[in-house]
Image (cartoon, rainbow, N blue to C red):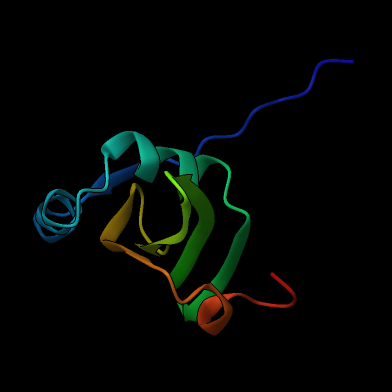
Length: 93
């Protein structure tokens, strides 16, 4: 049986592009978090948070991508990484 791979259509706002560059988060990392998030949950109506843990060197970071999903294509509002994984993780990390 073939497994369908679903990809969300999205664009990055100018703000999100600027913040990703400033925070040294690659667009490949943003795409990976959106395509295969470890967690996805609503922040508020029409806006979801996609997040995944990534390891860089000896550190593990949480990359969070904030997306307005109530439009087509969806809009990436901002992106950031944090070492405070337990603060943002839903359930046990």
